[in-house]
Length: 300
Image (tube, rainbow, N blue to C red):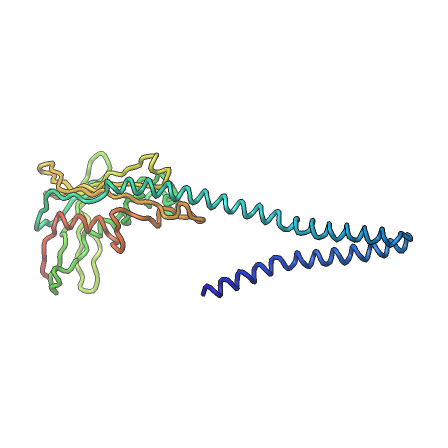
C-alpha cells in the first residue's frame, strides 16, 4: 500500500510539472525561431543573435518556472498556516477537555430497589423550535453534553424492557415515567406503555396522577462561555428522593466536539468525545438511572 501511494504521488508530481517543462521547451523553441528569423531579416550579426538567444533561453528557464512555483508556494504556505491553526485549536480544546475530565464521573450515595416508576423534572425537546442540524453547529447549544436523543425518545428509553438476569420471561423495567411540564401550572404527565408480544406499544399519557413518582431525575447543563470557546460542554445528572430532598446520586459528564481542529466542522456536536467514555452505550443516562433506582422485575 505504501508503494502504491508513493507511486501515485510521483505520478501526480509528474503530471503537475510536465506542462511547465513543455511550456519552457515551447518558449525556448519559439524565441530561437523568432530571434534567428528576425536576425536574418534585419541582417543582424550572428554573435548578437547568439547573445539574444541565450538571454531569451535564460528568461524562459527563469520566468516560466517562477510563474508556476510562486502560486504553489503561496498555496503551500496557506495550507501550512491553516494546518497550524487547526492543530492549535485542537490542542487547546483537548487540554481544556482533559482538565474538565478530572471532575467527571459518578457518585452514588444510595440505591433503591423495586422502583415502579420515576419522574423526569426536565426533558429537552431539541426539535420543538429549531432544526437539530442548526443547533448541532452552535458552540453555545445548551444540550450539547446530553448525548442521548431528547423528547419522547428520551422518555421511551426508561420504559424499555430489559431482560432480567438472562431469565426468559422476566423483564427489568419501570411501569411508568412521570414528566413535569415547563408551564406555570406544573402539570405532571404520566407516560405508560402497553406491551405487545410482537413489538412495544404506543405511549399512553395521563395528566396529574394521584401518586406522582417519589424519585426524580434532573440535569444541570454547563454552558460556560470559556469552555464553549473550545467546544467543550458539560452536564450534571442528578437523582433525587423528592420525599426527603436527598441526593441519591450524581454523574458529571463532559463532551468535546471532535470536528474542531479538522478541515470539516459540519454538525460539530454530532460526533463527540465524552468523559466518562460512553463507547458503545446509546442510552448512558437511563442506564445510570437504572443502576441507582433499580426497576421492578416483572413476569410476562
